[in-house]
Image 1: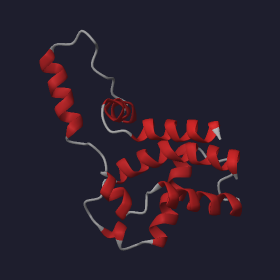
Image 2: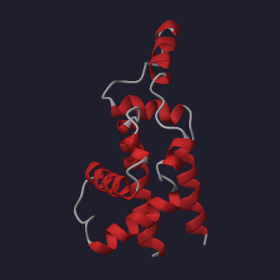
Image 3: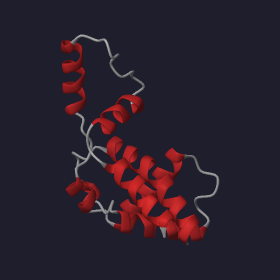
Length: 137
């Protein structure tokens, strides 16, 4: 039971908006985070640049079916079919996103969706879900 709550705590921390998301955005784009001794104008410019690309909101995730419960069910089904064997994180996210798009095509028909943010979210959460499925079945 303690492992379960520990896993939920880790999941909660990973999904918190804020500074962790900003550094993840910098890493995903291959850019380096501003140095600790950088001028404040450089930091303000970098923060404004990242704030413009915040990702997807909690409401958008719910509308797209990117809830923990739904993702767990999709990953469990894909795992049972054997479609997840030997895939990298990005391939795992693509297969899961493809399955979600097939299940709810109307939600993904929006032209203004940030698919890079969706894939980034999936790449971060899917390994945790797979670990939970291994631990608790």
